[in-house]
Length: 467
Image (cartoon, rainbow, N blue to C red; front, side):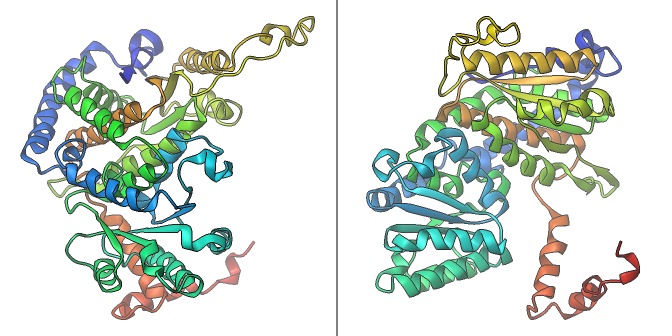
């Protein structure tokens, strides 16, 4: 099972100024107990939507499997249209559980379609993907994911791909679209119903950044031959572990305790996630949205200005040993590093028995690359500790659907606990809305005239400030 190892975040390793002491843990015990009781009660009452996804809402997985049975046998390409929580989970699952060369494999070897997740409105990205999939659009599935259908980025993507299908497929083009959206209302729901698209539900009570274990993330995963039953089973297993109140044994409580104490007591508001596996690199992208959007808040639940929130940072071992670790060791001591470690990698390669007589290379001969990357991680852990920089390790026995499911639920639950400890609402994102509304105004949407006037100074370039 997935485990959290936190010794290198303690005073025994990095000293009491930067590491967690027993006194620190004792001081947080009552607050953690209250936070845990609140979150678990919400889980059991059904008011915390993401907690019901692993086992209490089988209809979502059943709906996904029905559409996979329909589309997967002849699908050669799949395009996911979405942004933020409607895209990052899809990318993370695909990156973790399928080979990095998935889209380069032959149709016969892949056992599922090529996957293209369009998570931006960059014109070149859109044109490149449209160009490559238009050759076989009659065997392409376009999955548009939006609760309302009115998010500017996803709406524009959808309009482009819908138009492409209409022009190139004509007969039966609507059957190539699957809309993952609100089950009862909304612009996309109404369009899908009117034009006859297949539909999957975005749960009412699950925010986008918590939605990876709903049809939002499950459909593209299952289409690409990922075992979603094991994914959900892993999440359920972690849920059961996290519901037991024992700060020393509960991985969610311990991870939340370390992260909270580092931010609130040890002056470390920067939280780095550093996987020692390329397969897990995009999990750090998923984590960044979850952590930033949930915990970065201006006000607490009592209406007080608190301007709180740990800053999530993405790194990759070993790549960033050569680009960021210099800063992490000798720059401001304001970071907690969370390593993702893999005991058994999906593949391993033996280094040839060459250059055995070359002192600087001979030690590598006949060694496994898995052994090398593990040594690199341990070396970075040691180097950080030597500079009194705390770290935590999340250990994956191997990278499979079950352990990925455990990881996803662990971080969702930890985020809920952090929200309680910080006395903030971890499930809204008020600061995101103004940017969305300003986009509407700048693009000329009706009803945003006043905001359009406010944005005008930003459209003009003051040449006095051009360097």
